Length: 180
Ligand SMILES: [Zn+2]
Image (cartoon, rainbow, N blue to C red; front, side, top):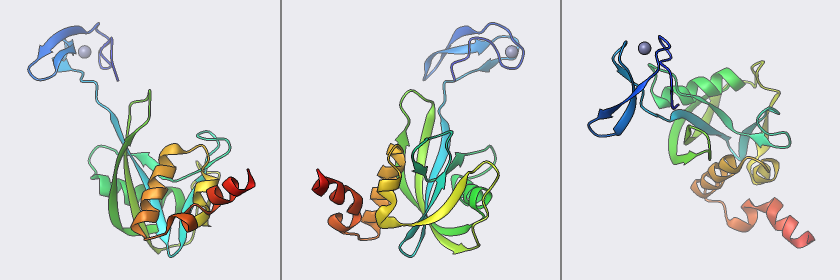
């Protein structure tokens, strides 16, 4: 976030030299520099045999299912965020967390840290913030995630990790190609 005024006291920020980062907005009253940092969040593909956990959240994408995601909060490791967010949003317990790389959302300040994790136990028990949660066959996931570009990149990585072959994996895309 690029602040113009101090979020603590409201003083207009001045630009001050920081040794490594160049000019940085600074509040002389509080003696704080406001670096333009990204907001880290996690995206998690939860896997149970040949199934993947997908959610429906219309405020994110109207026509698309998404993976579990959430912000990293102060005081927790990113691995803890993964476990907490999956539990909070879906009621499912996971372990065997594997990092799949990072991604960014254009024109936003989000740094997406992407993971896959294995189902351990629990029945689906969605939070009130979520419209729906369900297990989907992983071979159909890409078709159901039309608008979720980052989610689809994560699913492709998961499919590769699981050793799926391309023509089987992208069943829906394969079908769509044949229909054209
Ligand atoms: Zn201030």
